[in-house]
Picture 1 (cartoon, rainbow, N blue to C red):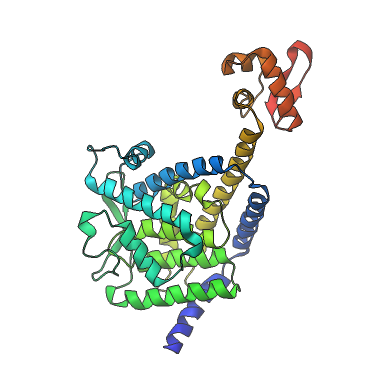
Picture 2 (picture 1 turned 90 degrees about the horizontal axis):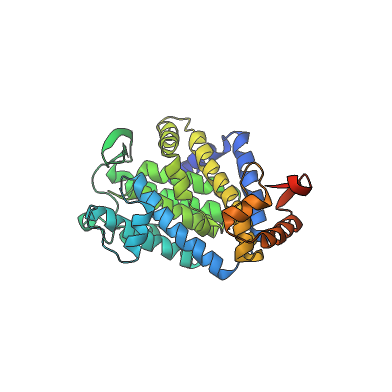
Length: 358
């Protein structure tokens, strides 16, 4: 047993130590942005609650659509408010409800949830608890073979990406993966983002359950990143970024996992994709932070003036007053405040004065 674990440890460690320098640079950028979030995230509780509710809907919709669901974010929101969606397959609504409830639990309780095989199996049961067709296998490792297939918007398979771990080896490989991940996180010899990225790509390669592996991997990503201090996860959806780059997501998985049967497994394509998703998420979190802080500093009318200054180009006070429906003197006062906050700059003077965002 010791020898088997040493071989597995060596396999995972060598994968990570062979990654190129560009991976370290991506991690540096992500952690720098994380530090900026931690320093600046003194937001009103109501703002955070509103952002979290929005992300729960967005993440649930995106994660289930990646696997073929047809529900829009608006449909997800209606479903969670208890409104009937009879025009959709019941399976779509069952999967959405399971994901929404499980992700809510992770956001609420991540600090007290142990990362273990028991948790992974419990999460799988919770994820599929509303899915009638999954009653027999929820929370249990697969007992028959499965393959990873890419699906289109209609839920139809458009091709096999790769074959997964045989059912009879699934328990052994999951035990080894979870134990390596636990140990690596405790020892801190490898950066946590590399540990989490390796866990996800290996988990998806094993594909330990008959169904729900992709959705579960994204819930586990939220859990692990939150536990490692990436606390903006509930306020910006990483699932949505993956959905927006779905083809690249499948390609990165395939390029890495097809090397796993060789002696030179290369997870660079997956790590590059995974870390770029996190980098995008980190940037969006800081943009969100800046906007939320602005909302707290400005009155409703001042916020309306800010929103009517275009992202690119310039605008006159008169154009802002017309678009925002705000009296011209109020617009002038708001522009002065926005300049003091260094959010805009003035161009020209007199009647030719225009304003633009910094």
